[in-house]
Length: 108
Image 1: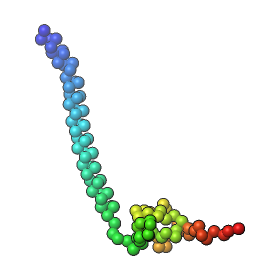
Image 2 (image 1 turned 120 degrees about the horizontal axis):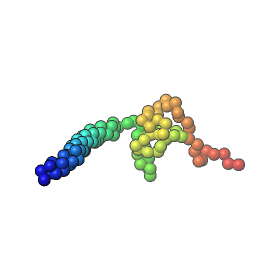
Image 3 (image 1 turned 60 degrees about the horizontal axis):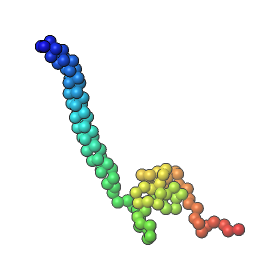
Image 4 (image 1 turned 180 degrees about the vertical axis):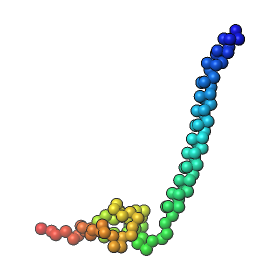
């Protein structure tokens, strides 16, 4: 009877050790992910704080815009300037292209 119990205990021992190691690893991973998320959110907040810029202006009916609105690539947004140079500046940008205005088209 004692030998049978010993064989059963030895049979379950690797499974129990494996479960213990898995549980410990999961707890360590959760802790590291939580710490990384906290660190990343602090970095993002600092990146999103932008000083007032001279090329930000208010357009009636549209809202705040940044960048040169006459450029073809301007996003017409208060958060991003354009697709090719999102962080700016617009002055002396090598990607600048004049926007075609609806009123400036030649009528035949």
